[in-house]
Amino acid sequence: MKVGVLALQGAVTEHIRSIELAGVEAVAVKKIEELADVQGLIIPGGESTTIGKLMRKYGFIEAIRNFSAAGKPIFGTCAGLIVLAKRIEGQDEAHLALMDITVARNAFGRQRESFETDLEIKGIDESVRAVFIRAPLITSVGNQVEILSTYQDEIVTARQGHLLVSSYHPELTDDYRLHQYFVDMIRAYQGSMS
Image 1 (cartoon, rainbow, N blue to C red):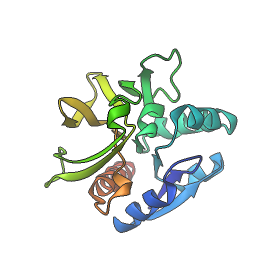
Image 2 (cartoon, one colour):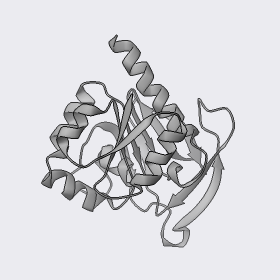
Image 3 (cartoon, rainbow, N blue to C red):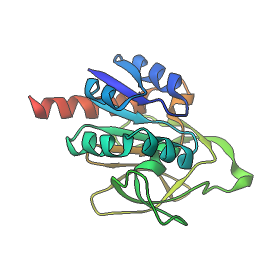
Image 4 (tube, rainbow, N blue to C red):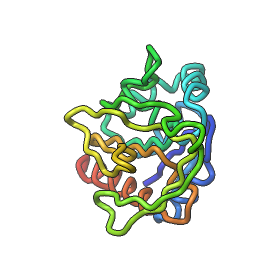
């Protein structure tokens, strides 16, 4: 198994380290052809508008939609969550528009630009340390979306089948259990294909 980390912007090396801690090989994905070599893809944080522009420029929008259509798991963190969302508040156009969620960018406002907290996440035994940096929030979900965790009654982790998203940066701590959860999603996908 090999997990790709979309390397257009964001904490690519940190995600690779977290996936490797979960015992799986991870590679940076810089060209659409490299998607064929991976069974799961992480879209890291950064600036969602910039990531969206770069994805359009290098042909990743259609390529990642095809990757998703094949049922291959995708994990979007922070800006990656925004990129996966079908609806972005205050914007006419979404990016990949794969996950049935509505998101608000920089939802915690300027006064809460960065903070850390412990989250209870469904499917993970003990609380997970979460680093929020200018984090988006999921403001609404479709009926196929499972809410995995909330912070102050706001949705910050969710899953829709083979798609996983978090408002925060799980790669910025030594706790790799959310990456392990994603690796388990890929294993389940591989099991369903055999």
